[in-house]
Every structure is written in C-alpha cells, then in structure tokens.
Image (cartoon, rainbow over all chains, first blue to last red; front, side, top):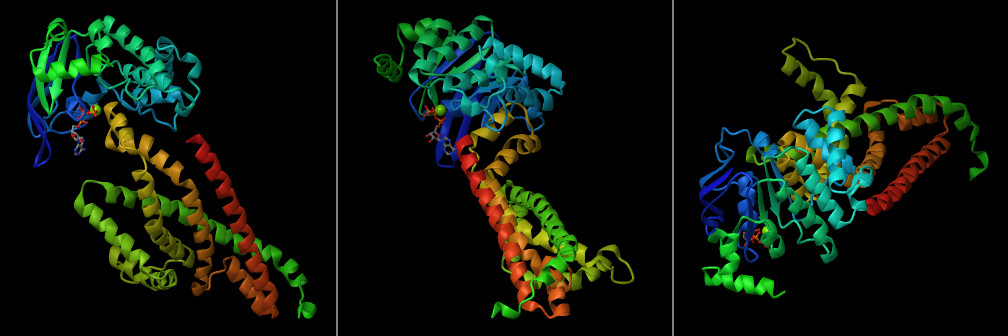
Length: 243
Length: 230
Ligand SMILES: Nc1ncnc2c1ncn2[C@@H]1O[C@H](COP(=O)(O)OP(=O)(O)OP(=O)(O)O)[C@@H](O)[C@H]1O
Ligand SMILES: [Mg+2]
C-alpha cells in the first residue's frame, strides 16, 4: 500500500533530516514508528502524503507515485487520512462542518450525504451530541476523536497518525487509542508515529525505530519487543518503558 | 460668543446633509472598504505566495501607496484616470470618468495597501498546521485559502479591519478637493451659502466624532467576544 524507497531529505543543504529511508506498509498492516525526538518521524510520515517534499528516492501510495510532478496531489491526499498531534480541527467551523467540508468540496458529495456520513462517524467515535458545537468547546480527547472521524469521512485507503495522543492529558489518551485499536481490528491500513508501546503491542504488525533520520530497526512486533537488535533501540525502549 | 449663533440652520439643512452628503460618504466608505479588502487580500496572497516576482510586485505597490499623501493620490488620479482610460482602451479622446467612480477607485487602490498588510498579518497568525490539515484532506490551495485560512484570518483581524474602516470613513472627507458633495462637502456648501461656518463645521465635527466613537466602541466589544471564542 505504501512503498518508501531510499528517501533522502534535506531541510537545508547542510541538514539532512532523512537518510536513505526504505520501508513499506502492506494492505491491512499496522506499522508503528517510534524514536527519539527530532529523529525525523513526523517528517517521514508527512512525506507519505507529500505535505513535505523530498529530494531523492521514491514513495508510492496504492501504486501512485507521490513525488511524480504529474500526480494529482489533492486527489491522492483525499484518499490518505491524516491525524495530527495538535488535532488541527478548523476552529471557525462546527464539528459537523469540520466533517463535511472536504466531503463536499473534494469528493463532491451532497450536503445531505456528507451530513449523514458525518453523523454516522461522530456516533462511531461517541460524539454525536457534540455535532453542533465548535472545536474550542470540546476536550482534547474529544477533538482528536473528531479529527479521526474527519479523516475517516473521506473513506481513506490508509490512515497516517502523527503522535495522536502526545498532546493529550493522560486521562484522555485511552479514549483516542480505543478508537484507533478498533480501526486496526477492522483492517484499516495504518502508519502510526507514537510512543504508546501498549498500543504497539496490542495491534502493531511491525515496529520501525528511527534515529537521526535513519530507519535503524524495522522488525515484526514480536522481534522488536523480544530483543531489538540495535543498541540505540534498546536504550530508547528501556527509557520509555520505564516511564 | 455663542450668543449670535443660529443652530436652526442645521435643522433646516438636515435632509440635505444626510440624504445627500452622508449617503455619499457611507456608500463610498462601504464600497471602498469592500473593494480594498478584496484587492488587499489578493495583494497579501501574492506577497505570501512562493512566487518571488509576484511578492515583489505586491510589495512595491504597497510601499508606493503608503508613501504618498492620500489627497495627492485623489487629486492626481482624478486628472489622470481619463488619460489612462484612453491609453488602455485606445480611444481617441480622454475617457470621462465621474468624480464618484474616480474617487472610489482611488480609495480602493489606496486602502488595499493598508488592508493587505492587515490580512497578511492575519494569515500569518494562523498556525501552519491548519493549511496542512486542509491539504491533507485533499483541499487544493485555493480551497484551503477560501474555506480554512482566510475566514480565520478575517475573523482574527476583524477589529483591526473595522478600525481601519473608521479611518477610511474620516478620510473620505478628502474628496472635497474634487468638490464632491459628501457629508463634509454638503456641510461646507450650506456653511458658505448661509454664512454659518461655525455652526456647520461644529456640527460636522460632532457627527464624525459620534459615528467614529460608536464604531470604536463596537470594535472593543467585538474584541472581547473574539478573545472568548479563542
Ligand atoms: N520545516 C523545518 N525546517 C527545518 N528543520 C525542520 C523543519 N521541520 C523539522 N525540522 C527539524 O528536523 C528534525 C526532524 O524533525 P521531525 O519533526 O521530523 O522529528 P520527530 O521525530 O517528529 O520529533 P518529535 O518527536 O519531536 O515530533 C528536527 O531536528 C527538526 O528540528
Ligand atoms: Mg514529530
């Protein structure tokens, strides 16, 4: 579903943020990406839907090359759901309109259809009563669930998550993770940057460990948690698991 | 000193002052603000676009407009527009442009320079995550601006935009150089005709002051409300 091969990216000529990154996510697979702060996880996941450009290598999603200038990026992105660390709901729109906007403008769905789909997804994440409120009136956990629903409203073929729970108060983490676990169980293809190792243990197929712009480890979950091969990954794991 | 003032002259002139004068002033203010906002937003988008040349053009335009006294622009524009029109359309004679059209175009062009700086600040105040989220949903650049970035920028900047419009409201009185009958022009005509300069200019001052004050008060209420929403 996602093929990443030999991707290199520089923010400035002297600062290489991604070095020869190669990995893939197959259909129905859940891949967790972890690593220390500044290691390039966000950058890598943003390259997948071309929110960030990269200088060399290739990424393709469902057979469409992301870095091909001829690719219709808005169309590709509409099929790739993305959830951000800081939710990024549109504060000037009601919750239901946050869910409807792209359905209507990008997928050309009628207002009625978009509303029906939106309400169905809000119900699914347990927030049907909040439809007429504005994002600022919701808690962080609720906002992130809305953000997930907003992405799902586009019927994505794959979902990208960039630290979806790290901006949340601890007591709200699980309500968001529950939604993600359900998604994984339903067979959604997911690439998830997170330090929630509980989530990784529960639903991940593979775990990728990044450090200083490189993919240091890319292993099946059992192997990764069993015994990471690299020192760096071991150190990182012991640090976050001891918390 | 106020003993021999005749305030009844104001009462008698009221219909003329307001139906003709104030109507013109408010129409000019409203249309110029609207046009200035649209044109100014376009300038702001040009400056923030990745295209260097576009940004440069907009930047030079804004700096140029802001370094000229408004009266001069109104004056010159009125005399130049017929010739510019002739040049553009290739007509054999200067195009005749009414004083209203001329002053409206001048104000739009002039205000656009100021509104563009306000909108630029407004757009820059939106976190980068917002357009990123819109793009990630598949919205194009134009849709992202139209539905996500500009509405928020506009809302955040509304108090400043209205304040600028109050300044514009006062500045429209400068059309007197074209002998147009705006509110001040009307007052001034009555003043000359009836020899009641003190009464009429006093009254004009009170009216400008009152309207501007009420608008400023409205802005402050609005600011408080926006602060709560955020
Ligand atoms: N737009 C940018 N311009 C320049 N440097 C950037 C930019 N965005 C990120 N960086 C740098 O690139 C490096 C990788 O950033 P990235 O956000 O991908 O890391 P991360 O692994 O997601 O970290 P975190 O866990 O803190 O989110 C960091 O050193 C960061 O400072
Ligand atoms: Mg990050």
